Length: 532
Image 1: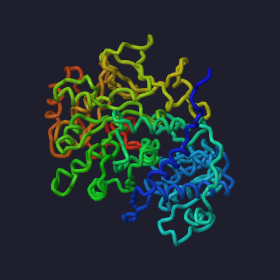
Image 2: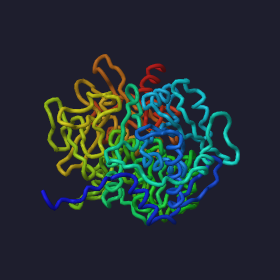
Image 3: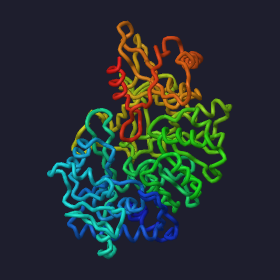
Image 4: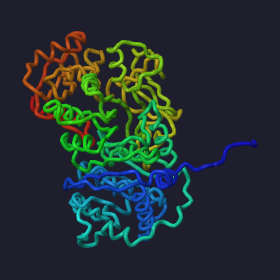
């Protein structure tokens, strides 16, 4: 019909050019591997991104080719975030903490033609099978004045010899812009490709007040790595609105993060719970040493944020924003903001903020049982299923087709409840639920309660075989200070029925984690079984 809107392709070209036009003087800070800070601007990043795009073309990288990165959070990685997609190629960020076999697997699956890599990570390339090694290995050298050896290409020399891209290719919003692989908590990693349209819409929505609430007045520090689901989209969101960026490099220890928060006036930061638990411990040891006056939000994802974590930051005047997502959701699926109708007390406020919140705009959610969708009653559990414009519709190569329903929803593998107001509560991963005597026990609820005890640094609850009940829960705890098992079980007895209480508490020095910082319960179960 007549009178329809213009057809306007939603691509990262718009985000890049907007940053150049309106925010070219806004600062981007990077901490280098040697601990020094370097400073640049969006204007310089845009220029260098366009040079990188042109240089990739000169190397023979064509539209749709995959260009991988193995790198930490710094400005040169940010240049690849834009330079690769606007050239028409596909950015493939790889987690350097993966096992060497998994790195080789994902590079082979993606058919990466080029690799941008931090010099400190070059041993990973040396270990790659010859048939997997990309044609072009471009090094982000720690000392740009010393070019790399052999057939390696120096990044600075490469873009220094290139003029900025004179014209962008005619990109479609449905073209792939980037790709990540799942963390392989079960089975081999699976590839997820994100379209330009998906990333643009994700950036717009995540900046909204009831989502991340990021504006051009913010200073954003992603403590989540840039190889982990696009650093939760924060580099793209920051560029879209003109927020300054602080990129912490490989040093994610609490002292280094706090030095950046205080020294650079960070207002918004993001990372997994274990990062912030250690930050809280460091602050607690010397509260007067750190100025958090500008920091207003800590975004927590990857694992559940406990009420204890939320309240600890509240006491510092910093709000914890709890979000849920996964590689397949680019990653934001829901954010825990209080709705306008909230009128509960303080305890109810903290409880709701510790849920996974309500679905982000444009994302639909449902919980599905064996007989179909279950009611939104906050009681009935089912597998969480999602759909939306930045939700994966398939995996690379057609893998994992059983994860997609016939009516177009992604099966997440999370067991969840949704209450009448739409608040999502993940009760467990399907593989981590404990079935004891025919009844389900949520390991996450037990873990969150254990984390409230001041003597507990980390807690995981796993299922162990039981001849009578099939499975029973066992608590595995990392202590911050001495505590007896019975004291922890007494805390749980105040909240849970007798049959839900773990049969015991095991103290360990460390809980094994995946390459993305989540508890590896599979490895923990194997470890406990081995030690039994």
